[in-house]
Image (cartoon, rainbow, N blue to C red; front, side):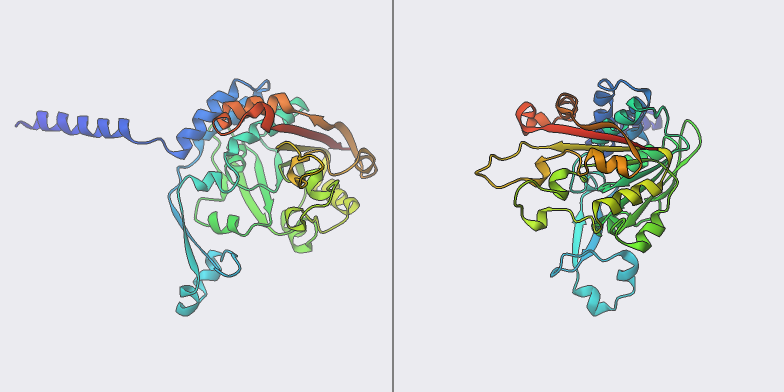
Amino acid sequence: MNRILILALSLGTVAAAQETSPPTIVDNLAAEGERIAALMSTDVARDFAGRAVHLPVPSQRTLYRDAETGAYVLPDEWASLDADARAALESVELPADQYYTTKYGTPMAYARVVELMGLHGVTSLEGKRVLDYGYGTIGHLRMMASMGAETVGIDVDRFLPALYSEAGDLGDVENPSGAPGRTSIVTGRWPASKPVIEEVGGGFDVFTSKNTLKRGYVHPSRDADPSTLIDLGVGDAGFLAALHDCLEPGGLVVIYNICPPQNPADKPYIPWADGQSPFTRAQWDAAGFDVLAFSVVDDEPTRALATALGWGANMDVETSLHGWYTITRRR
């Protein structure tokens, strides 16, 4: 068999293997972005939806946690342990997809958050500083950073810094169309912890929160299991004062929540089903914010987003999903 024929057969084999390779998580996110872009009315949201193609393809990772407490051990802590202490830890193998989906599903649902930014004056994220409260996954932070933003995510879950601990996970993010962005994460209770406040810093142009700052979590209207609630660690006034201080004058706050239906009065209360603002209009005003949209029902766009993301395969989105958003601006 001549060399040309052997080469042709080899190339054909490689091409066939490539064609049959399953799509990566980045391929899937990019496909979601294409479907979502058609729903967006602002350029900044359409830009965000197209940024998934720039995400790095992750690999499977091994994390370590205390089997008794469930707490994850950070890599630098693990490296300092002796052999016996390491052996006592449970190893957790995470599939590659979980790098972006973590415990909360696709980061592409943040497209609605970016759309709400765009509808309230944010035409570009280049050069903007964005603080996300309860970030839950790094995907949307990196996508916004690839648009030229400096993004900072806050969360209390030590699973996240354990997952995002390898070189390249954080730091500078290339922006193919302009100035580079940057992504960082902070673990702890903001603003209850002074060291966390100092690490987060200030000067932010936008503060976002999706599925974390819900009225049901912070101020449930009925008795609820305390383990399902969110303790801000400070009073309402203290939280809003810290939020005010971390923003630049004119800084935008976008709170967006996706919720299931609430149970009737004779069934257990579902804290995460109430996605209205945890703070009243009067509280926002007293803290120095102009209220642009207050506990607005967002069912139709939320359900359209859910349909584009394929959630309808596991639920009836018309009856199983509700949306709310609140938008304020620092005076």
